[in-house]
Image (tube, rainbow, N blue to C red; front, side, top):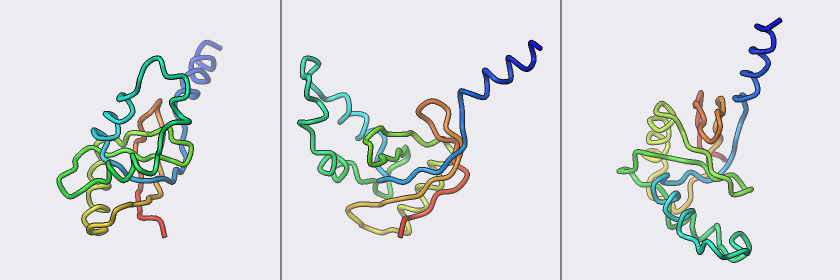
Length: 120
């Protein structure tokens, strides 16, 4: 019985899925997310997500990636996902915006990436 309860509890912390969104430089995006007035109650209303995403478009030197789905809550990629995302960036060239589809298993705010591809 204890094993079943433990198994059920641990199953709730991660889940497999597919996410779509803009691929961004995780360091840049993290800075943008933290660069807000702590007393501002309209944080999400006052911000231009598309402009922030364009500022954080990854380049060939980027080594930490995240995706930003339409809801704006970013998800970090694991080490394997970062390597796969770097390949996507190299093949995309100098695009101002790279949309991707990511498949994997999420654990809190990080995705253990199984596959990543540029969205059509």
